[in-house]
Amino acid sequence: MEQLKICGTCGTHYLPHASSDVCEICNDDRQYIPDGGQIWITPDQLQRNNSVRLHKLHERVYELQIKPTFAIGQRALLILSDQGNILWDCIPLLNEPTISFIKTHGGLKAIAFSHPHYYSNMNDWAEVFDCKIYIHQNDEQWIFNMNNHINLWTGQEKKLWDGIRLINIGGHFPGSSILHVPFLSKEGTVFCGDTLAIAPNKKHIAVMYSYPNRIPLSLQEMNRIKNRLDKIPFDSLYGFYSDQNLSEDVKKILAASLHQYI
Image 1 (cartoon, rainbow, N blue to C red):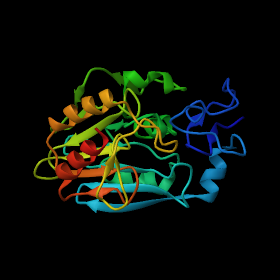
Image 2: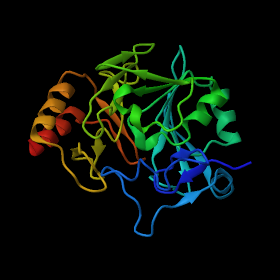
Image 3: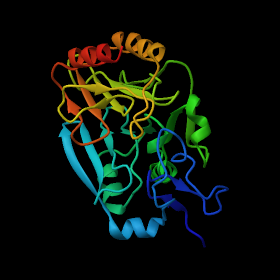
Image 4: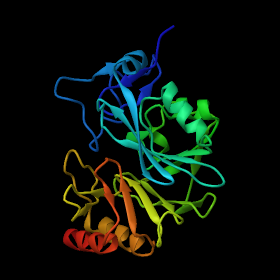
């Protein structure tokens, strides 16, 4: 039986007989095909050569990362909530220690996404934990293996439970979204993937059409995003890499960053 194939650049899982010889997500201006051409690996290879590191960031937040770093190298974030846990974004590897850890902490009620670069093996996660997947309908075209776990949501906001909500921001992708969790900090905590990207010096927050290819957004789009973010209360921000945690002067840094763009 043929295995799924995994894009070595972004980690997206494709069916063995996918119609294209290149990853459609990487063959787009917001990502890239490597100079040497498309790289494919199998799930067995990933399981053999990599593991998942779990790290506690907060009493209710755990970081999951593939080690050694694979593909984009993003982290997934497990948020523990009274009425059900959420996995924010996905990593392309799901192994038995990770499954056991999450089940010990109450399983998953849902997986939610910032944007298509992190869809990876979302269907495997949803099958194992029998949970819903939330993706904004504006990014439906980037789903290459649709199943019953996937729920497409529409509009600017989707309320979940315990005050948690998904908010569509746009910019990087039309469906680019953030997860707002009110009970993790005084003003609320935002999980942003790279809908917003925190700089290594923690003094700047970027919003771009393409990060790897350095393609900016239009002035009109930047103004729209600024107006959108101005109306959302939060004082803590978690991005897609381990060094992208910000809990001081978040709104001040964001405002200054967007002002520079505009």
